[in-house]
Image (cartoon, rainbow, N blue to C red; front, side):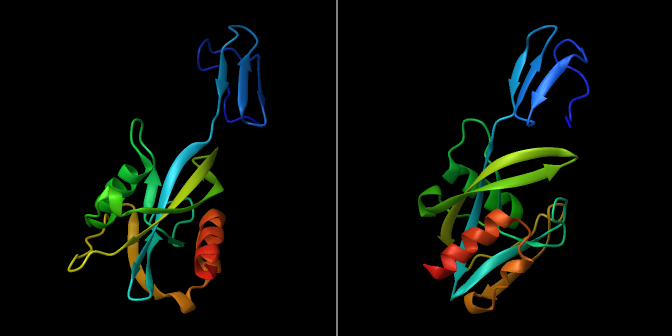
Length: 170
């Protein structure tokens, strides 16, 4: 089943959209590739605890998440980490302080469009004397959870559950 009802170029209904990845219009010959979107998530540490956010939007509303988001055009993954941490938590962390940990593929279903993402996971330390001020439209709450008390099943996205499991085992 396609989430397109018409060709976005010529409005034709004569098209194929193989596996929601490659769209080709039979009339105007437009080809569109629904490629993987890059996203970041940050494991923020402080005193043997990890900072989790609680999602305030679908998908996975109410579930635990890691701070992060989608990479903007012309932005490095580390710049995205800095921007997203500032937007979501009002905390400043320099791009050079984010250390790459791993990547995980993810399914991100938003408004009935199935996006495939590649989640790039970074690790950073919470800055001394920083205070969190949440972006309430995106984040309902935050929780510091001791590493040994993290329940992976409470994390909303499979990609982040896998990354957190690998992190805790490393």
